[in-house]
Amino acid sequence: MKTIYFVIPCYNEEEVLKETAKRLEEKMESLMENKKISENSRIVFIDDGSKDSTWSIIEELNKLDEKFSGIKLSRNRGHQNALLAGLMTVKEKCDAAISLDADLQDDINVVDKFIDRFIDGCEIVYGVRSDRKMDTIFKRTTAQGFYRVMKVLGVDIVYNHADYRLMSKRSLDELENFKEVNLFLRGIVPLIGFKSDIVLYERNERYAGESKYPLKKMLLFAFEGITSFSVKPIRIVLGVGIVMFLSSLVALIYSLVVWILGKTVHGWTTLVSSVWMLGGLQLLGMGIIGEYIGKIYMESKGRPKFIVEKFINK
Ligand code: UDP
Ligand code: MG
Image 1 (cartoon, helix red, strand yellow):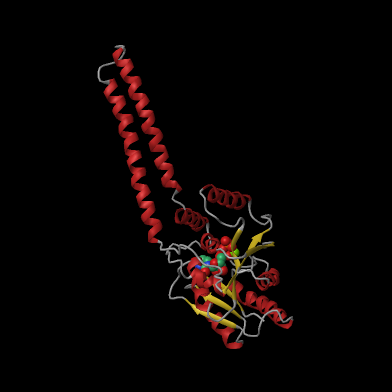
Image 2 (cartoon, protein in one colour):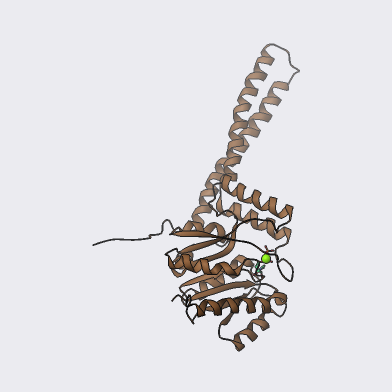
Protein backbone atom coordinates (compact mmCIF):
# COMPACT_ATOMS: atom_id res chain seq x y z
CA MET A 1 0.00 0.00 0.00
CA LYS A 2 1.22 3.46 -0.89
CA THR A 3 1.68 6.37 1.44
CA ILE A 4 0.10 9.42 -0.14
CA TYR A 5 0.48 12.98 1.09
CA PHE A 6 -1.99 15.68 0.11
CA VAL A 7 -0.21 19.02 -0.16
CA ILE A 8 -2.33 22.16 0.10
CA PRO A 9 -0.98 25.72 0.01
CA CYS A 10 -3.18 28.13 1.97
CA TYR A 11 -3.17 31.89 1.97
CA ASN A 12 -5.82 33.56 4.14
CA GLU A 13 -8.10 30.57 3.84
CA GLU A 14 -9.82 30.65 7.25
CA GLU A 15 -13.23 30.62 5.57
CA VAL A 16 -12.71 27.35 3.76
CA LEU A 17 -10.09 25.47 5.73
CA LYS A 18 -12.28 23.56 8.17
CA GLU A 19 -14.67 22.39 5.49
CA THR A 20 -11.75 21.45 3.24
CA ALA A 21 -10.18 19.49 6.08
CA LYS A 22 -13.46 17.67 6.72
CA ARG A 23 -13.98 16.69 3.09
CA LEU A 24 -10.39 15.60 2.63
CA GLU A 25 -10.49 13.56 5.81
CA GLU A 26 -13.60 11.73 4.60
CA LYS A 27 -11.91 11.07 1.29
CA MET A 28 -8.81 9.82 3.00
CA GLU A 29 -10.70 7.54 5.36
CA SER A 30 -12.54 5.92 2.48
CA LEU A 31 -9.25 5.43 0.62
CA MET A 32 -7.76 3.83 3.74
CA GLU A 33 -10.79 1.58 4.24
CA ASN A 34 -10.54 0.39 0.65
CA LYS A 35 -6.88 -0.38 1.29
CA LYS A 36 -5.81 2.01 -1.45
CA ILE A 37 -3.48 4.07 0.70
CA SER A 38 -1.60 3.32 3.88
CA GLU A 39 -2.45 4.54 7.36
CA ASN A 40 0.65 6.73 7.27
CA SER A 41 -0.84 9.00 4.64
CA ARG A 42 -1.30 12.63 5.60
CA ILE A 43 -3.02 15.89 4.71
CA VAL A 44 -0.46 18.68 4.82
CA PHE A 45 -1.46 22.35 4.88
CA ILE A 46 1.15 24.97 4.06
CA ASP A 47 0.44 28.35 5.53
CA ASP A 48 1.87 30.83 3.05
CA GLY A 49 2.27 33.68 5.52
CA SER A 50 -1.48 34.20 6.04
CA LYS A 51 -2.65 37.25 7.94
CA ASP A 52 -5.82 35.63 9.27
CA SER A 53 -6.33 32.64 11.57
CA THR A 54 -5.26 30.06 8.96
CA TRP A 55 -2.26 28.88 10.97
CA SER A 56 -4.15 28.48 14.23
CA ILE A 57 -6.76 26.38 12.42
CA ILE A 58 -3.97 24.19 11.05
CA GLU A 59 -2.47 23.81 14.54
CA GLU A 60 -5.85 22.91 15.94
CA LEU A 61 -6.43 20.27 13.25
CA ASN A 62 -3.01 18.82 13.92
CA LYS A 63 -3.71 18.60 17.65
CA LEU A 64 -7.02 16.85 17.10
CA ASP A 65 -5.90 14.35 14.52
CA GLU A 66 -2.52 13.08 13.43
CA LYS A 67 -3.77 12.83 9.84
CA PHE A 68 -3.34 16.60 9.57
CA SER A 69 0.09 18.19 9.37
CA GLY A 70 1.13 21.78 8.88
CA ILE A 71 4.04 23.75 7.49
CA LYS A 72 4.29 27.46 8.22
CA LEU A 73 6.29 29.68 5.89
CA SER A 74 8.02 32.68 7.43
CA ARG A 75 6.12 35.04 5.12
CA ASN A 76 3.97 35.11 2.02
CA ARG A 77 5.92 33.80 -0.97
CA GLY A 78 3.11 33.05 -3.39
CA HIS A 79 1.28 29.92 -4.41
CA GLN A 80 4.04 28.28 -6.46
CA ASN A 81 6.71 28.70 -3.80
CA ALA A 82 4.35 27.54 -1.06
CA LEU A 83 3.51 24.46 -3.08
CA LEU A 84 7.17 23.67 -3.71
CA ALA A 85 7.94 24.16 -0.02
CA GLY A 86 5.26 21.60 0.79
CA LEU A 87 6.38 19.07 -1.80
CA MET A 88 10.05 19.30 -0.83
CA THR A 89 9.27 19.03 2.88
CA VAL A 90 7.16 15.90 2.58
CA LYS A 91 8.92 14.03 -0.20
CA GLU A 92 11.06 11.82 2.04
CA LYS A 93 8.01 10.62 3.92
CA CYS A 94 5.66 9.59 1.13
CA ASP A 95 5.50 7.46 -2.01
CA ALA A 96 3.65 10.21 -3.85
CA ALA A 97 2.22 13.65 -3.18
CA ILE A 98 -0.99 15.12 -4.57
CA SER A 99 -1.13 18.91 -4.79
CA LEU A 100 -4.43 20.75 -4.70
CA ASP A 101 -5.92 24.11 -3.76
CA ALA A 102 -7.44 24.90 -0.39
CA ASP A 103 -10.79 25.88 -1.89
CA LEU A 104 -11.42 22.38 -3.30
CA GLN A 105 -12.38 23.77 -6.70
CA ASP A 106 -10.77 20.67 -8.09
CA ASP A 107 -12.95 17.59 -7.70
CA ILE A 108 -11.29 15.44 -5.04
CA ASN A 109 -13.12 12.32 -6.14
CA VAL A 110 -10.64 11.84 -8.97
CA VAL A 111 -7.76 11.15 -6.57
CA ASP A 112 -8.80 7.49 -6.77
CA LYS A 113 -7.91 7.61 -10.46
CA PHE A 114 -4.67 9.46 -9.69
CA ILE A 115 -3.66 6.68 -7.33
CA ASP A 116 -4.69 3.95 -9.80
CA ARG A 117 -2.49 5.49 -12.48
CA PHE A 118 0.35 5.80 -10.00
CA ILE A 119 0.04 2.12 -9.07
CA ASP A 120 0.06 1.33 -12.83
CA GLY A 121 3.51 2.89 -12.93
CA CYS A 122 2.96 6.55 -13.79
CA GLU A 123 5.39 8.88 -12.05
CA ILE A 124 3.27 11.97 -12.73
CA VAL A 125 -0.50 12.19 -13.13
CA TYR A 126 -1.93 15.49 -14.39
CA GLY A 127 -5.43 16.62 -13.48
CA VAL A 128 -6.95 18.20 -16.59
CA ARG A 129 -10.17 20.20 -16.62
CA SER A 130 -12.72 18.63 -18.91
CA ASP A 131 -14.40 21.97 -19.64
CA ARG A 132 -14.48 25.57 -18.58
CA LYS A 133 -18.23 26.00 -18.17
CA MET A 134 -17.82 27.41 -14.66
CA ASP A 135 -15.49 30.20 -15.75
CA THR A 136 -16.53 33.67 -16.80
CA ILE A 137 -16.14 34.30 -20.53
CA PHE A 138 -13.23 36.59 -19.76
CA LYS A 139 -11.35 34.00 -17.71
CA ARG A 140 -12.07 31.30 -20.28
CA THR A 141 -10.83 33.25 -23.28
CA THR A 142 -7.74 34.62 -21.53
CA ALA A 143 -6.84 31.20 -20.14
CA GLN A 144 -7.23 29.48 -23.48
CA GLY A 145 -5.34 32.29 -25.22
CA PHE A 146 -2.55 31.78 -22.72
CA TYR A 147 -2.23 28.05 -23.42
CA ARG A 148 -2.14 28.83 -27.13
CA VAL A 149 0.53 31.51 -26.80
CA MET A 150 2.64 29.11 -24.74
CA LYS A 151 2.33 26.52 -27.46
CA VAL A 152 3.37 28.99 -30.18
CA LEU A 153 6.36 29.95 -28.03
CA GLY A 154 7.38 26.33 -27.88
CA VAL A 155 6.67 25.71 -24.19
CA ASP A 156 5.53 22.20 -23.40
CA ILE A 157 2.64 22.55 -20.96
CA VAL A 158 -0.36 20.30 -20.47
CA TYR A 159 -3.49 21.95 -21.88
CA ASN A 160 -6.02 22.97 -19.20
CA HIS A 161 -3.90 21.57 -16.39
CA ALA A 162 -3.12 23.79 -13.43
CA ASP A 163 -1.51 22.51 -10.26
CA TYR A 164 -3.74 19.57 -9.45
CA ARG A 165 -1.45 16.60 -9.91
CA LEU A 166 0.16 13.58 -8.38
CA MET A 167 3.93 13.33 -8.32
CA SER A 168 5.85 10.28 -7.21
CA LYS A 169 8.74 10.47 -4.78
CA ARG A 170 11.06 9.84 -7.71
CA SER A 171 9.74 12.73 -9.79
CA LEU A 172 9.89 14.99 -6.73
CA ASP A 173 13.55 14.10 -6.31
CA GLU A 174 14.11 15.19 -9.90
CA LEU A 175 12.07 18.35 -9.40
CA GLU A 176 14.50 19.33 -6.67
CA ASN A 177 17.26 19.58 -9.31
CA PHE A 178 15.51 22.43 -11.08
CA LYS A 179 17.23 25.31 -9.36
CA GLU A 180 15.29 28.20 -10.85
CA VAL A 181 13.98 30.93 -8.63
CA ASN A 182 11.16 32.07 -10.92
CA LEU A 183 8.86 29.15 -10.43
CA PHE A 184 6.31 28.11 -12.99
CA LEU A 185 5.66 24.55 -11.93
CA ARG A 186 3.28 23.60 -14.71
CA GLY A 187 6.08 24.34 -17.16
CA ILE A 188 8.79 22.55 -15.19
CA VAL A 189 6.96 19.33 -14.34
CA PRO A 190 6.55 18.19 -17.99
CA LEU A 191 10.31 18.68 -18.43
CA ILE A 192 10.88 15.93 -15.89
CA GLY A 193 9.43 13.37 -18.28
CA PHE A 194 8.87 9.75 -17.15
CA LYS A 195 5.70 7.79 -17.70
CA SER A 196 2.76 10.08 -17.07
CA ASP A 197 -0.94 10.28 -17.74
CA ILE A 198 -3.82 12.72 -17.52
CA VAL A 199 -7.08 12.37 -15.63
CA LEU A 200 -10.07 14.52 -16.57
CA TYR A 201 -12.11 16.26 -13.89
CA GLU A 202 -14.70 18.97 -13.52
CA ARG A 203 -13.86 22.12 -11.72
CA ASN A 204 -16.34 23.64 -9.29
CA GLU A 205 -16.75 27.10 -7.95
CA ARG A 206 -14.83 28.20 -4.88
CA TYR A 207 -17.36 27.47 -2.13
CA ALA A 208 -16.32 30.28 0.20
CA GLY A 209 -13.85 33.12 0.40
CA GLU A 210 -12.37 35.05 -2.48
CA SER A 211 -9.90 34.12 -5.17
CA LYS A 212 -6.34 34.82 -4.06
CA TYR A 213 -5.46 35.33 -7.70
CA PRO A 214 -6.83 38.71 -8.73
CA LEU A 215 -6.43 39.78 -12.36
CA LYS A 216 -3.12 41.55 -11.74
CA LYS A 217 -1.55 38.48 -10.14
CA MET A 218 -2.93 36.30 -12.89
CA LEU A 219 -1.39 38.44 -15.63
CA LEU A 220 1.94 38.57 -13.80
CA PHE A 221 1.83 34.80 -13.47
CA ALA A 222 1.16 34.35 -17.19
CA PHE A 223 4.01 36.74 -18.01
CA GLU A 224 6.26 34.79 -15.64
CA GLY A 225 5.34 31.60 -17.42
CA ILE A 226 6.26 32.99 -20.80
CA THR A 227 9.48 34.73 -19.84
CA SER A 228 10.68 31.82 -17.67
CA PHE A 229 10.37 29.33 -20.46
CA SER A 230 10.88 30.98 -23.78
CA VAL A 231 13.51 33.18 -25.37
CA LYS A 232 11.31 33.50 -28.45
CA PRO A 233 10.35 37.11 -27.63
CA ILE A 234 14.05 37.97 -28.09
CA ARG A 235 14.04 36.14 -31.40
CA ILE A 236 11.09 38.25 -32.50
CA VAL A 237 13.13 41.42 -31.86
CA LEU A 238 15.98 39.90 -33.86
CA GLY A 239 13.60 39.00 -36.68
CA VAL A 240 12.14 42.50 -36.82
CA GLY A 241 15.69 43.89 -36.79
CA ILE A 242 16.67 41.79 -39.79
CA VAL A 243 13.54 42.78 -41.73
CA MET A 244 14.09 46.47 -40.88
CA PHE A 245 17.71 46.31 -41.94
CA LEU A 246 16.89 44.63 -45.25
CA SER A 247 14.18 47.16 -45.99
CA SER A 248 16.62 49.94 -45.13
CA LEU A 249 18.82 48.67 -47.97
CA VAL A 250 15.84 48.87 -50.33
CA ALA A 251 15.08 52.38 -49.03
CA LEU A 252 18.71 53.34 -49.58
CA ILE A 253 18.68 52.18 -53.19
CA TYR A 254 15.34 53.88 -53.77
CA SER A 255 16.47 57.20 -52.33
CA LEU A 256 19.73 57.05 -54.30
CA VAL A 257 17.80 56.45 -57.54
CA VAL A 258 15.46 59.35 -56.81
CA TRP A 259 18.50 61.51 -55.98
CA ILE A 260 20.28 60.59 -59.23
CA LEU A 261 17.13 61.42 -61.17
CA GLY A 262 17.31 64.78 -59.38
CA LYS A 263 13.74 64.63 -58.11
CA THR A 264 14.47 65.31 -54.45
CA VAL A 265 14.65 68.15 -52.00
CA HIS A 266 18.20 68.81 -50.82
CA GLY A 267 19.14 66.59 -47.81
CA TRP A 268 16.20 64.19 -48.12
CA THR A 269 18.24 61.22 -49.34
CA THR A 270 20.75 61.24 -46.50
CA LEU A 271 18.02 61.78 -43.95
CA VAL A 272 15.74 58.99 -45.12
CA SER A 273 18.46 56.43 -45.63
CA SER A 274 20.09 57.13 -42.27
CA VAL A 275 16.80 56.88 -40.37
CA TRP A 276 16.09 53.44 -41.84
CA MET A 277 19.66 52.20 -41.63
CA LEU A 278 20.18 53.25 -38.03
CA GLY A 279 16.79 51.95 -36.91
CA GLY A 280 17.40 48.61 -38.58
CA LEU A 281 20.96 48.31 -37.31
CA GLN A 282 19.94 49.16 -33.76
CA LEU A 283 17.20 46.57 -33.65
CA LEU A 284 19.50 44.02 -35.21
CA GLY A 285 22.18 44.78 -32.64
CA MET A 286 19.70 44.55 -29.81
CA GLY A 287 18.43 41.25 -31.10
CA ILE A 288 21.95 39.85 -31.24
CA ILE A 289 22.77 41.05 -27.73
CA GLY A 290 19.43 39.64 -26.68
CA GLU A 291 20.38 36.24 -28.06
CA TYR A 292 23.40 36.17 -25.76
CA ILE A 293 21.40 37.38 -22.79
CA GLY A 294 18.92 34.62 -23.58
CA LYS A 295 21.74 32.10 -23.46
CA ILE A 296 23.05 33.44 -20.15
CA TYR A 297 19.51 33.39 -18.85
CA MET A 298 18.99 29.76 -19.73
CA GLU A 299 22.42 28.80 -18.37
CA SER A 300 21.78 30.61 -15.12
CA LYS A 301 18.81 28.37 -14.43
CA GLY A 302 21.15 25.42 -14.04
CA ARG A 303 18.45 23.01 -15.12
CA PRO A 304 19.38 19.34 -15.37
CA LYS A 305 20.40 18.43 -18.90
CA PHE A 306 18.84 14.98 -18.77
CA ILE A 307 17.14 12.61 -16.40
CA VAL A 308 17.84 8.89 -16.67
CA GLU A 309 14.73 6.77 -16.48
CA LYS A 310 16.37 3.33 -16.64
CA PHE A 311 19.87 1.89 -16.81
CA ILE A 312 20.08 -1.76 -17.75
CA ASN A 313 23.45 -3.30 -17.31
CA LYS A 314 24.05 -7.06 -17.01
N1 UDP B 1 -2.29 30.73 -2.46
C1 UDP B 1 -1.10 30.74 -1.74
N2 UDP B 1 -0.35 31.89 -1.71
C2 UDP B 1 -0.74 33.03 -2.38
C3 UDP B 1 -1.95 33.00 -3.15
C4 UDP B 1 -2.69 31.82 -3.15
O1 UDP B 1 -0.71 29.74 -1.14
O2 UDP B 1 -0.03 34.02 -2.29
C5 UDP B 1 -3.09 29.48 -2.49
C6 UDP B 1 -4.55 29.62 -2.09
O3 UDP B 1 -4.71 29.58 -0.71
C7 UDP B 1 -5.19 28.44 -2.80
C8 UDP B 1 -4.34 28.31 -4.05
O4 UDP B 1 -3.14 29.03 -3.82
O5 UDP B 1 -5.09 27.25 -2.05
C9 UDP B 1 -5.05 28.83 -5.30
O6 UDP B 1 -5.59 30.12 -5.06
P1 UDP B 1 -7.05 30.53 -5.50
O7 UDP B 1 -7.99 29.39 -5.29
O8 UDP B 1 -7.41 31.78 -4.81
O9 UDP B 1 -6.85 30.80 -7.05
P2 UDP B 1 -7.92 30.60 -8.24
O10 UDP B 1 -8.54 29.25 -8.04
O11 UDP B 1 -8.89 31.71 -8.10
O12 UDP B 1 -7.09 30.69 -9.48
MG1 MG C 1 -9.33 28.51 -6.42
